[in-house]
Length: 204
Image (cartoon, rainbow, N blue to C red; front, side, top):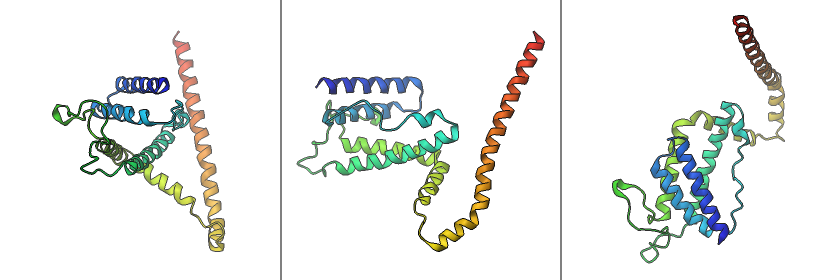
């Protein structure tokens, strides 16, 4: 019981911090996530506080971060879809079985209230994730699909093996040049910083 209460408090604080840091999460979405957390944390067998998604890729370059976040949004779409499948089928006798604790009233303006059923709230969150993924991460989605396609290359196919060997010189050259371009850009940035420092020192 103590662990569950502690988890709810930590998650509540996290949501507050997210709301303070920026306006990307709409208030309605923030409240909906909070309501769902009250439900899922209360039924979870274990909550160890460890994140599901690694934060390490977010310390890299912008393009790498965008590709990673595209994958995260795709995973959330599948995860929430699975959560919806696991809910009992609503019937007249069990219509209220998925309700969250709290008042059954929905706030003015159509906002999500604490008593709205889990299915409706999960569907709302799923829609927000899908919209973000569609409008902001199309390019990353295409790249992720191309990466997934690499796993399906027929390694034991003689035609594939022959064609891959034929394509290797160009791809190897491309891969090598990308690294050289990266290092050259880093050198140019370093030279610009040194030049700015020299100008600053001369002015002094």
